[in-house]
Length: 117
Image 1 (spheres, rainbow, N blue to C red):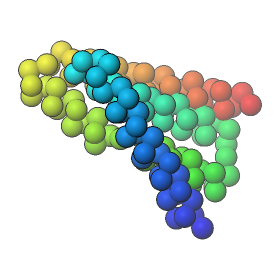
Image 2 (cartoon, one colour):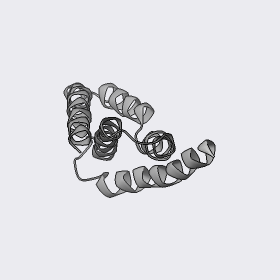
Image 3 (cartoon, rainbow, N blue to C red):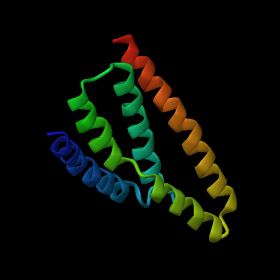
Image 4 (cartoon, one colour):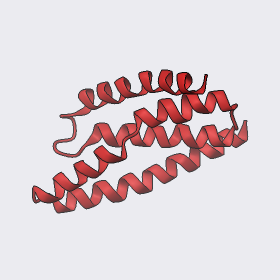
């Protein structure tokens, strides 16, 4: 049952990541806004799920499946490297630092909200 829940969550998270990226692709110039948004949203949700806490089934569906497919460290790394190699070093640095800082803040806020329930 657990692999099915993970697959079901991923089947929703991955297309949502793709659609978000497509919708935001040209709104911030070369800044990878789509990846930034899904990674922050996933951090917020994961923090919330840890704070609640949820059942093993809900964790498999939402935490592992949905958030695992929604968020993407590999794309984040590639986009930061691409910005750096294209000469946009300051933008690459800002992307890495803001992603880390805002992601941690989102996870913390999600956790606080989850524990408050």
